[in-house]
Amino acid sequence: MRLYQLFYDPVSRPRESDLLGPDQPFKPYPPVHRVRFNAGLRLAVFLGSAFGITVIVMLAGVAWATIWGGVTGDPELAESVFDSLGLGAAAELIGAIGAYLVLVGVLEGRGSPLELGWRRIGGFLKGIALGFFLITVTVGLLALMGCYHVRGFNSGYSPWSDLLMAGLTAGVAEELIFRGALFRILEDTVGTLFSVAASALIFGAVHLSNQDGTWLGAVGIAIGALVLPAVYIATRSLWWPMGVHLAWNVTQGPIWSSPISGTGTGRGMLRVEWTGPEWLTGGLFGIEASVVLMATVGAFSVWLLVMAHRSGNFIPPFWKRHRLLIARAVTAAGPSTTENS
Image (cartoon, rainbow, N blue to C red; front, top):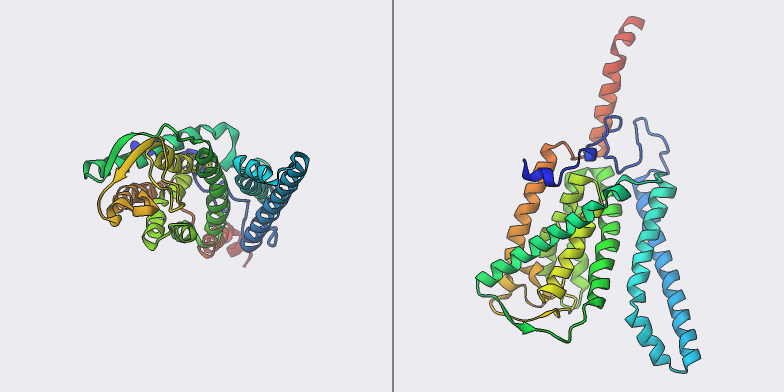
């Protein structure tokens, strides 16, 4: 339990008034703002806003690159500038941030969402430390098994592109999408347990479309990524999973030179050699498809989820919440009802 105190935040406990977490809009029973707080509507607005904002930013970037190409007389130079500045990654990042602001500020009416409170930004650094630790332990175990060998330094490697796209963009944008929107809205409807399973499966499945995507890699990500909703449930802070996700990718690629999620990026500061079967090393997908990572990170994630459940941080599905709230109201009104009858 003492170890769990490193993650647990007392403000993460559900409200007594509606049995929802502090990262949700207030939803008593009988409900108020039924339509505006509808889970399906909230998810649709978020996804639509993210798509629209991303397209607008991309079109603005294409227009800028086209104008730049006309001014310089070198369209290929404009395209290379577009790619080198990572405008595609920037569009995804801006789209996710803008959509989340629309979701929490306009639809949910939460101008200062607890999960992104600036006073809690220290969780970002703690998440980075946790992500680095989990991946480094996995690489260390693989090295002890004779699967990972360092052959020198990669002096020509420049980390900036990977830091921007695999680190910052994935860490922030994907956490806003998968934890801030998808997991949180699912949890409001079907409860914490089902939301953890559903969001993990979806998160793993979307990586099947990556360049070197495999079913084993998708399963590995679904299991390994359980740590992301686990730390979110314990803290109700998006800073934590953002930090874990950023360090998770950066530690794999730029630091230990492992492929990242089957995206074809296996470069890093070190020149390394992998030996052994793919089920152990992860193959071209990377160590997320390794049974070593599944076992170690999976066990840690299950422990963290169990501790979060024991601390009372799990949210019941809406039908159970409604029954509990109705029973509470009936109990509170019992004496007066009896006297009137």
